[in-house]
Structure formats: C-alpha cells, structure tokens
Length: 320
Image (cartoon, rainbow, N blue to C red):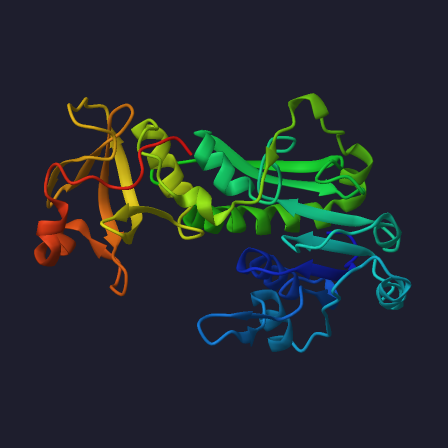
C-alpha cells in the first residue's frame, strides 16, 4: 500500500456515511469531516444530524458544516487541515474551483453511476426508471463542471428486476467502499491514467420531484413498475383512491390486455390488485392507506376489499 493519506471527507446521507466509516477503519488519517447543516425533519420538525455527522462525532472527528463553500472563510478552514486529498460522496453542495485546488492531490468523488451516464443528483433512481440493466460506481477527479471530471476507475453492478433504489443504493455502497479503498491505495497511478469522459454520451439524472410519484395509468405498465421501484423508498409512488392517497410500495407489470379504462381495477385478490394501464396491467402487491401501516395486498383486502372491487377507478388517467 502507498503512504497513508491525510483525508478530509465530505458527505451527508447514509450512502456517504458507509464510505466515511471505511476510511475511519483504514490506515488513512481522516482529519476533518464536512456535512450539510442540520435540518428540521419529521413531524416535530426537530433538527436532525446527517448520518455522516453522526458517524464523525462517534469517531470524535471535527465536523464542519458550512452553508456554502464559495467564501474566503471556507477556503481558509479547508486549508488549515493540510489534507492530501478531499473525498466527496453525496455531499450536496457545489465545490468551487478555489476549494478543489486546495488539497495536494485534489478532490475525488464517488458517484453512483457509470459515468458519463447519469451525471447529477439522482443517478440510482433514474437508472432504474430508464430500465438500465447495469449501473456501478465511478470515482472521478473533480473539476468545476457537474460530474464531468476524468474517471480513475469504475466498478459495474447488474440491476436486478426486483431492485428498488434503496436496495440498489445499499449494494452500490458496498461496491463503492471497495472501489474507494483500491483507489486510494493506487492514487498516484490512477490519477496519472485518469480517462476523460465522453461528453457526447452523457445523460443527466435530474433531482426527483415529489409529484413524479403520481402514477399515470395511461402509461405502459412496465414503465409504471420501474417507477415504483425507482421511487422506493423516496419520494414514493401513489395514486388517488376515492379522494385518499394510496401509496404503492411494490408492484410488477404483466403483459395482459384489458377491456376497461386506464386506471380501472381489473381484479383484486391475494396475488395483488391488477390495474389496467395504457398497455398491460400493473399488479400492486404492497400498498398503504392514509393513517395505516404498509401492508401486503392480501392483508389490505381483509379490511378494505369493498374499496378495491373490479371496475373501481384509480387516479387520473389523463397524461401528466
């Protein structure tokens, strides 16, 4: 292994916290941790620390939570740590050029896609939504553009037909931890050989808006099934049921035609609630009514069978 590095780590969610923990457990020296400011969350809107901050405090590491890095003060704070490298994983703030130039070896970003595909905020969700059959981890040398820097290494992972974004992110975290370890062990060689991205092959993973979770029943069932998986656990998929919001937590598509309108329930039994779509049928297997727990359809129908009778219409079938 190369000489241990002095590392500043920047990240916020659990995906990033797993990478931080791997660095804490490694021979490298984590000298400081950056995470987004504490924010109100939950019904009580109490301030909550990020998973990265929680892991850092447990390891008794200094935590820095700037609201922006586009200040002279931010440059001064980062400079004082005299880090060899800054490792960024799902941090959530833009790093300006002045910040990128401070660490001796620059800044690395662990990104959950096979760059240049799915640059941006939601690469895991967009890969599932698009029907990609594989994704992976890319570690790049950061530059001012959004996820445009040269790639040091990639690791691929198949996307299974049952992968939700939550499950896929967990699998990618394990892959990313291993990739980051390998990258830091061979950092000089990999930096020298880093390959520029082909911008002509780039795609952008836009941040997901909550309203995207509304199921448009005029779409193909296969498209809706992918969206249910892509948006689970957040922001979630839903439809209207007699004025109530029915959360759809798990579903799959079947290639069967139907005579009713899009959004009309074709059948409802222990196997699922079958809903007619623009093409095929979506079979809902787990759902949640307002004020209730998430339930399998078999359990849901025991108390609410009358609400899911064939012919009942869900949602708004008009195009969004």
